[in-house]
Length: 227
Length: 175
Image (tube, rainbow over all chains, first blue to last red; front, side, top):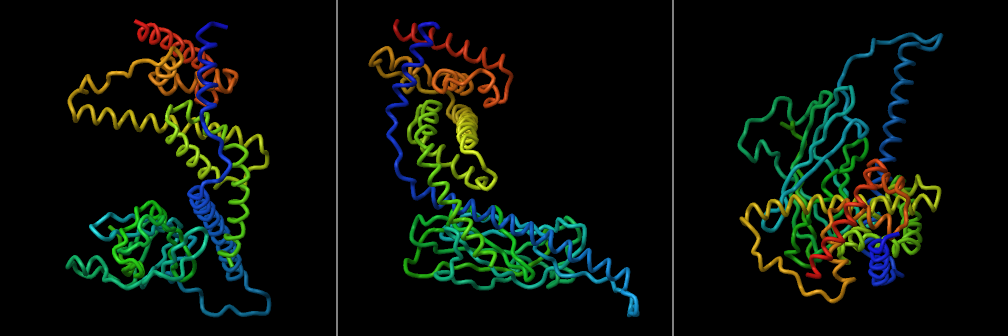
């Protein structure tokens, strides 16, 4: 062993000993870890729902193709476009910082092989530390982007038809997140048949606390076709 | 109901993570400090590593596996940090022209060991990681190669070049 190797071992050991011991788990770590665990759990939950939904749909399809003996086939099944399920969609959102609020949109993409539809305005639940935030947040409706930008109404709206790999979006505006420095929440979007995680929104830096004691405000727009 | 299950499993995993943190944080912070030379950054990297691993606890059966996994994550995060910093620094330097020579003047050396510590900070991120993993963690070349995603021969050369650079840097500081 050379002298430099000994010296390197020695300095590394000495420097390592300078680091104080960690008896306590930092509270910031607990919060961040819980959010990560919650996000993963929701992912697993959604996967289970998607698999169960798929299995149910397959059983129904088989039953329709092979009616039980003694029953008569009624009208042939009509081809209709059904409402999108949570298992078909993946949501990715982003918001940019305006002076006192954050503004952006959530994009929902149909990753299934079937066309489906979205309609209306989604409900949103925020989660922090693994719990839904049930107070201190006021939701309100905002107009769709096409209206706000003075564009013509998209064909078929308020129904948005999503062919496979096509996307819809809705606007979000978020303000007054108190107290100042409060951690960003997780966002979950309810679309009638289930819930999808709003990926990317957890990384949005929360808006400033402009009105301590007042609720956080979240304006949500209706679904509209995404470019 | 889903949220209840989520919350219960979340609480259990967070509790388990606390135990793992108490058992492994000291070693991980020391390793991160030796890799980065910055104690605050080391704390941040280790927290990031624990948060990353928090989502995978459900797949973890073996305590030993966690330690290796944690070490590997710390090495990866510190390498990513240095990669990002390299890009930022290149951008800053191109924006500023060249560095003011006074700003890079070094403080006078306290003793030879401190010179060596500073010289370690001037190695490339991969050289430093290879030296730390070999001489502090005492890992065999093959394991270091797995951590750094390279061949054992590359580790040998990273360590040899790192030591050579340390030698010449110290000789330079002595002058």
